[in-house]
Amino acid sequence: MKNPLCSLPCFSVSKKKYSQLYQRSQLPEGLCRHFSLAQIKAATDNFNEDSIIGRGDYGTAYKGTTNDGTIVVLKRWQSESGSYLLREMQNEVRFLCQLRHPHLASLIGICEEGNEAIPVYEYMSGGALSDRLYGQGYAPLLWKQRLQICVGAARGLHYLHTGAKYALFHGHITSRNLLLNEELSCKITDFGLSKLGSFCMSKASKVRRESKIKGIHGYMAPEYAMHGELTEKSDVFSFGVVLFEVLFGRPEYDSSLPEEKRYLFAMAMESIIEGTIYHAIDPQLKGRIAPECLNKYLEIAFSCVHDKGSERPEMGEVEVTLELALELQDRADAEMEAINPCGQYMHDEAPISIDAETIKISSLLI
Ligand SMILES: Nc1ncnc2c1ncn2[C@@H]1O[C@H](COP(=O)(O)OP(=O)(O)OP(=O)(O)O)[C@@H](O)[C@H]1O
Image 1 (cartoon, rainbow, N blue to C red):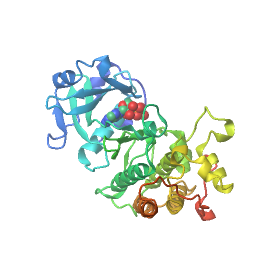
Image 2: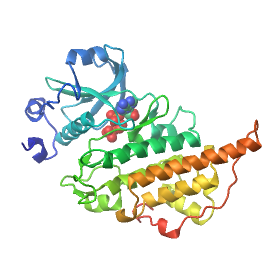
Image 3: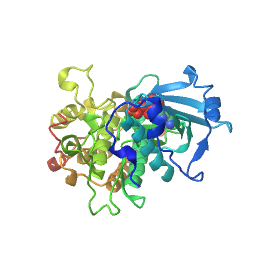
Image 4: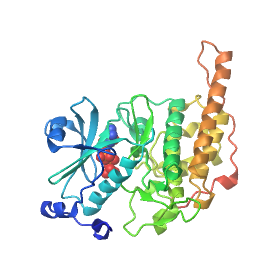
């Protein structure tokens, strides 16, 4: 049966209308635990202000503890929010209930009672990757930790694209949507904008959005920003943007910087052309990156943000290349440690050589 929500325009929903609009997910208990509203209230001390950890467009995120002691995050949808946000939340629940992967966010269950529709997630105590890269209050991530996080995220995204019966496109990959646990293992979250692709990826992998184009502009592939075409290659593009943030330790756009430095890609390009990349990257990484690793990393990062989707690699290739970059770093570190068994060491700043064909960045980015 066609979901009646799909044909609704974007408007805000009154409480009365909400119950008519909201279709119970009717997910079997085996796929998704069902919480009662009383259990949710107990977990958050009746939605106590102190339990709030953030607010999104849809409503409020709370940290809570379930009766078996599990620390969770609950997202309370507000009826004043637009109906498209309700649709996004249902979309997320529908996908996450059926997907299980160590690098995808874990949906523990949902509460559907009265006017409430509250998904319950595993709590990720390590925060968002964006916060760890350029937020306040965290120790800087080491280069190898960053690489491991990227490898994890690439595995999750590769699984999303190819691991299930139908390909799934995330549609909203950003460093804010990559959450870390205590061991710094990364999980992809926020599947509200996700779309099912074709049964077979090699056939028509293109999904055209009928609705408004949504997402964060700097992460959007040119074909998505301009024509609303969401494919697996749009996720690859967004992931490439994250790879640059990881290396440079800054957001893709930073209004606090002088104009010529605001756009991450303009800065990255200039540093490659002028041979000043080692000065442009995150200062915390100075001397920590082996040149052969940096070369591999930059090669794959630039190819991910290629102007043309067809020239971008598939996530499987991205994953393998990042694993190789990590291996090159491990090897170089082992060699340095053999020479300096108890000393601090710095890797050389060898020139970077990237094929000019790989660097074809959209003018939208710079
Ligand atoms: N599972 C989780 N574990 C720990 N923190 C989380 C979890 N999910 C979300 N958060 C944090 O809660 C805050 C709100 O997140 P949420 O996903 O609700 O909105 P957002 O991503 O900030 O915005 P939007 O979803 O509207 O783009 C963010 O700081 C996010 O890092």
